[in-house]
Length: 408
Image (cartoon, rainbow, N blue to C red):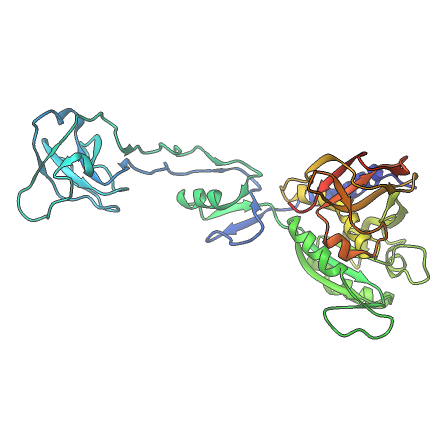
């Protein structure tokens, strides 16, 4: 029986061909997506930010050395944002708006509220203005390149692009950047008993949960789910689905058909085609499959999970989520901490058991549902995964357990 650590290493090895995939070149406006994208390479700014000296305030652009007690200034033409102002004449003050370029000769801005009068005057006729206090050169001026100088690093490689980062790219006029490409995944939920969607159930049938839950989990890990489909326990049906998608996918994730039953379609199709099937010392999620699957003329990494919905999700959390998020430049680990157990718990000593639970009001961990791998509603009500390591068969109230937060 393989240990969890051994199988985690094996899954990482299977995903190794996806490390050096080509980046996706983004062109155009920022992508609006719930998933942050990640830079595949560093980006430098070709321009200064800001690209010119400009006013930080609505006020008057002046020469600081001319502002002395009793000095009166002629009011020059207004300078609007986006305008190109003429040079500032001596003993003049140019009304200037926030963000407008500084006139040549001006070296500071005096806010409108510090002037007399303290409002902009009509533009017709000769006007004058005085100022209440002396001013220091550079006051209320945003110098060219004060945010970033041309040629400087704007964003390093592996930066997650959120609102501020997309804004910085836009401010620098950058319309093309290399992004870590999303790994394209085909999700296969196998079993004659499965019914997709909300179709009414006939006797012996159940609604498929795996294709839905794993597709969401994969997207949260940064992947692009090309298709998520239910497949019967017929090998030819599975081969037809594979033939439909083989040329456009990077990874296959399947559920069901990996154990020792009479109708194990995933084993039937992939055993001997590059995929090995093993047992991991974990509950739930013991039966596992992985390898580089030969599909037609393609060789595609594949990870095969058990069919019960809790087993599939626990397997994803333990084996696939961390390296997949890492491949997408995202933090791979769940928040982990130790908390006291709220009630007694039994576990098979030969296996690492993963139970579902919630934190109680006093910080204790309350187990939700039993150990069975079909309890998806209990999983949905949980906020943490509780880890009981190999060698432990019983824990009592107050005993410390390691938990992973799954609601962050």
